[in-house]
Image 1 (spheres, helix red, strand yellow):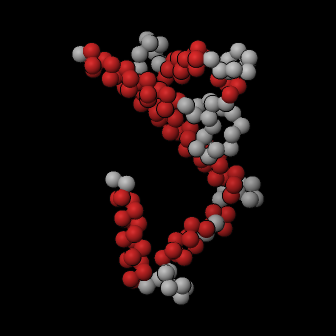
Image 2 (image 1 turned 30 degrees about the vertical axis):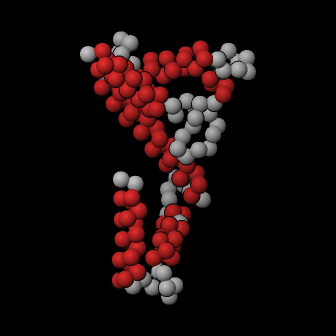
Image 3 (image 1 turned 120 degrees about the vertical axis):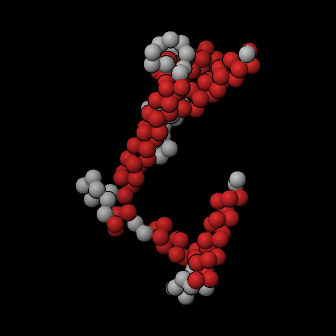
Length: 154
């Protein structure tokens, strides 16, 4: 029983740390999202981050996830926090893509603005004899390599 409680508590702590680490805002331009800045962690603005300030930030992130305020995270609260984090990440990534590619600033991406970089790179990687065309053997080799690469990590 004690082991189960410890496992659940540890899992909740790890989840809270991971799921909430990117929710602070700052001026970083990372498309994966902002990270906590030094200033956000240095609560008393003394130019140093103490263990107590780190613990306070952790407790604050936990409290944000603990929507009913009972001092414990339910699966529903953890799911809500994870869902909010995923939505936040998706929105930041979309903002990054539009900021980079929407050259006319109209809030829409045309095929030209989307660019052909990935398509061009994939074609070039597949056209191994560089004749400007992809043969069946070249295509099969490319597919096999991608499949092997994806399943190598497993």
